[in-house]
Image 1 (cartoon, rainbow, N blue to C red):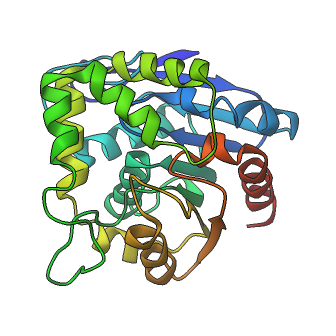
Image 2: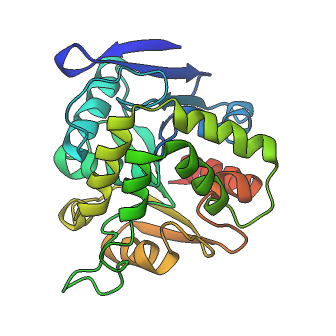
Image 3: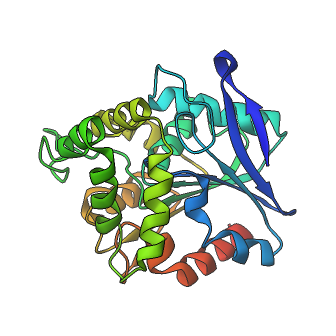
Length: 269
């Protein structure tokens, strides 16, 4: 475990274990790096190095009052990769983290990244636009934002129920509830406004590295048709893997399949 200073004196918590090919994980909203605990043991057993970043405002990282946009998150990721002297990493983003890494690739010209994995990614757009008819209806995410403002415990309960297609234990749901409640309220609200409003298509179109797109076909948070086919078509080097037994939380719904898919991707891409 380590703490790395990024911009403006903000320190991020970084979970760094193992040796070998580095895989850098960027979590979803409003969780932290521990959401990947069903992935770490398998990848470590396969001889890989797992690095999980808690984004500013979330987990054990600093929680300043201020900006929680994709540019800020992407700049923080770059600062971590450079501070740790990492190159040729596999950069993995789940949900909002998928948006973060999409912006990173465009904003920072794919620096330090050899492969990209987008898991249930909230990318490139979530809300319907005149030139993006497959998006969610306008206002579809506003209840999440209102809940983050007024009733975070109830919001987290709702999220843990929506995450999965498979039956999951109450203990897992309570654990994820706890992770979400560790986030800053202001960061939770502001980051949700970020992923609601973002249009990452220019960043998506700039991606050239081998890219794995994994998405649950039963996803109720980022529906499959809103994002996965767009990423598959919009990234020339993309390979789409459908998770037929998963909702949004494919990390827990089909962990064995996801772990095998990630391992094969790192070794073969």
